[in-house]
Image (cartoon, rainbow, N blue to C red; front, top):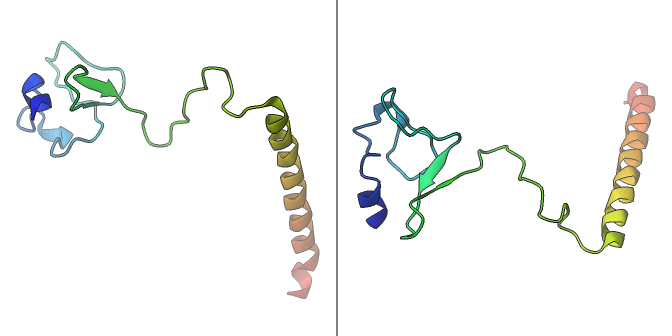
Length: 104
């Protein structure tokens, strides 16, 4: 595997506590390492890209280039206002449950 030869210092034997058995996103480093990454990363199989940063689970994806991913503006407006309708229906449902709790 060419990706292993390019970054051969990232072996499980060099980072015992990092669990480097599979190619998951991690940020392994030792106290004497000169290069420490800001976030988790993984080795790629691409010849031109040795490694790339990963988004941790639970992190919201960064904003889209144009600030939105839904076109056109009318569709965004429909989604925006329908969210209020959904919240209102949820509120009504909650009120119904609270009013009916004595009858259950």
